[in-house]
Image (tube, rainbow, N blue to C red):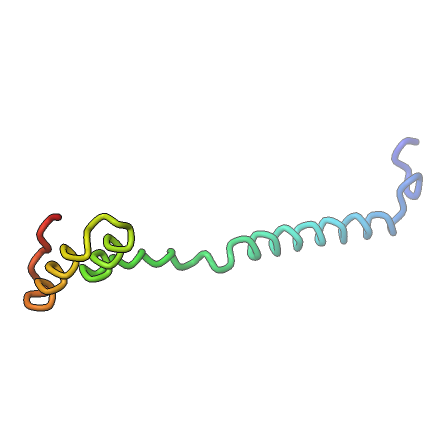
Length: 87
């Protein structure tokens, strides 16, 4: 007979197969948790530059001269909410 008990497969092999499936399932759950951990919070939005930081960056990049820098810097000190004049 083809599927007679204890022909080819023993009870021990069935236990080993079941434990193998349980181990595979546990590994899959562990992998999903490990890959998704730490992704619950979205990345913080980048901070926008202040007018003073923009002015400093433009001077460092050579986009404005030191005279233009001083003029706009004085404007920012007297009225920090006013937009700087274009150079």
